[in-house]
Image 1 (tube, rainbow, N blue to C red):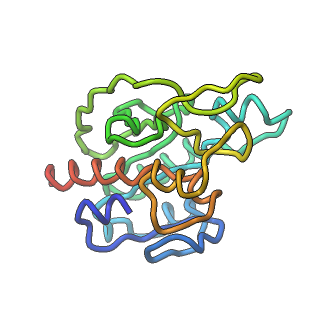
Image 2 (tube, rainbow, N blue to C red):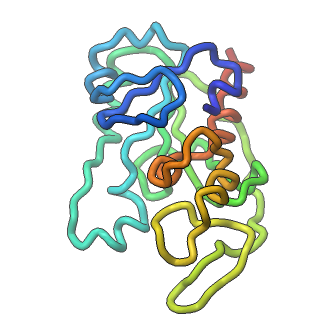
Image 3 (cartoon, rainbow, N blue to C red):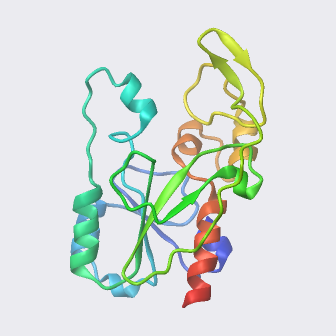
Length: 202
C-alpha cells in the first residue's frame, strides 16, 4: 500500500501462503522461486520481507526450541544473481542484513514503535532518516504491572493489547480487520517514504 501511495502504477504481491486481505494483484508462489525464475527487469523495484521469526527477539523468547526458516541469504543471492533490478530487503533488528535505513512509527506520527531495518541493493541510494526520540512507553502489562503510554503493541492477544480499530489506526492500515494480517505488516508509511525516495532518485 505504501508503494501505491508513493505513486507506483502496479503493485504485485507474492507469498507462499494465501493472503486474502492483500489489496493488490497477488500470486501465491515461493518467493525464492520467483526471484530465481522470473524476468525481474519487468519490475522497477523489488521489495523483499523474508520471515522474521528466526531473528525476532519476541519469538526467540517464546519459541521453546522451535526452529524457524532463515531465508534472507538465499533470497538475497537469488535477487543479486538473476537481475540488476534494484531491491530492498526489510527485517527486524536481529536479522543479518545491512542496516542501511531504520524506520520507526514515531517518525511518521504513528502509535507504534515498530523498528524495521532496510538493506538497499543494486545501486539504490539509501535515504537519510533521523531517528526520532520516543515519547514514552508501549501500553500494556509487563510482568504483572500495567504501563500506560502513547504506543500500542501490535502483536499477540494478551497483555492489554489494543482493539482491532486501535491497531488499524496505530499502523495506518484500513483495508483489513484481520489481527494476524495487521500484526505481520509494517506500516505503509514506511514503504511510502521509501517509494517516494526511490522515485525521486529515478
